[in-house]
Length: 635
Image 1 (spheres, rainbow, N blue to C red):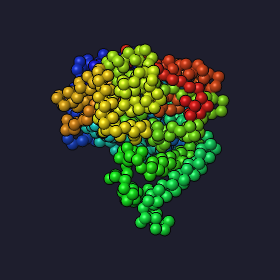
Image 2: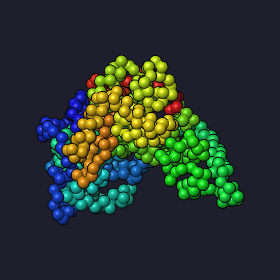
Image 3: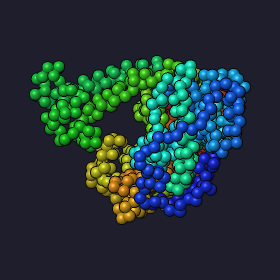
Image 4: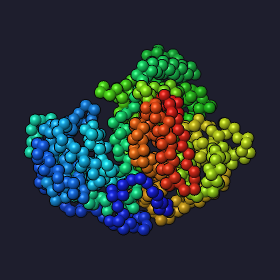
């Protein structure tokens, strides 16, 4: 079990304050979320509609806003004419305060030019806590109108996701209202026509209820976060929301001309790879060689490809990459298969598909960013998935800054290994990092029995899968597959066993940490694990987590904690540089910045990222590599 780690950060403490409810001194072994917070009444009730006032005139809005400045907390929701802030409009802003009618601001009736908007901006800039559900969506539309928050919001969706991480529970407002309030919300009006000249009474009731429920949900979720010792990570997540909204809003620019040329080359390479594979599949197979071209092997059919390979004597039972990768060195046809699949994936996943994601309104790609897209707490992307953009120079050089601007690309150096060293307290690893040594070279030296100065480039390549695989408890067969599939490194099972033994014999602190986690898992039946920021992943008591899962979350989850803390702390210092955050890819943060302030912004980015890492890594130095570039490939 991980020790609790505390660190400072520039985030608002009034979002989740530990002063309201004392923190529990120990973690919970068996965690089934909702039992201590949800009411569990039966049957589920229909919620009562709160009182509300429709502010469709300046004088009504002025009167309705006045009491809100003294409110201790506000629940804020919006209704829009669509999902895209670049082409759709904000229709309603709903503002709920305790013991006060919900204020529904009709933006179609109150023009932006009116002075009353200054009052609304001051309210949003006030220090009062503001509660949202899926705040990044609302913030994009509010930012479009110049309504910005002074402090990070309390997000009921993220709060629920933190409490139930790993349990795969739904996180819509409807789902969590049912879970925590035992209420059933009718969401039919969510997709109603919000462009109408006059909104219906049912639409207004629906809008008022959503904002009102946010206040009730916070009353339950806030103490639940504190009780679960998730206050610190909640502050980090909430404080990162404005940066996430900014990334979705600005997006990335693609050089269409370069990309179109690249797609043509992709097609040529794909065709060549297909012809080569087809020829190799038939050349040593008399039965296939006699077939007309129309009856050739369907290269996208695993069963047909498998039969053809088996006919050539390739000893495999499936064509998945994990099984064929270790045999690539013996059977050139398998290398041809991997090459064909690589080109097929690039062409299908990106190719013309990426061009379809360019917004006609901005000329940029605006992916959907899921802040808690992985159980580890890491981001995930969709439409498109920028995290899966191939690392090849020819692909990434197509992602460019706007004219007169630069990309600033920064990523943490070996952050997962550094975190593993910090968590395990392994003195050999810690000392190596403190001395500025390359851990891949050191590992190669230790497992191969070579002097450090005689370790070559190929030796270092072998050490990479050993380091990144074994810190998560991988066995010898798994290490063999992992090295082959992910690094192109071929090793026998005997070599994998030998490397594994020498690795843990050399890094005894890491071995001791693994044993500690293993005992907690199998002897104590532990069903949760934590990061250095106390982020947790849970399993139901009926589910047995694997050792790999128990080791993975503390490392990759802490990496997420660090990256998100950096995002949270970047916004303020970057303001005077006009730099904007446009992407996060794993441990890498990308800014777009005017050329004149690029050097200054790069320095700020590096400093903030290092400080975020040092919040949690106390013995291991944090290194960040920063590049000012004209495209993504120049990293």
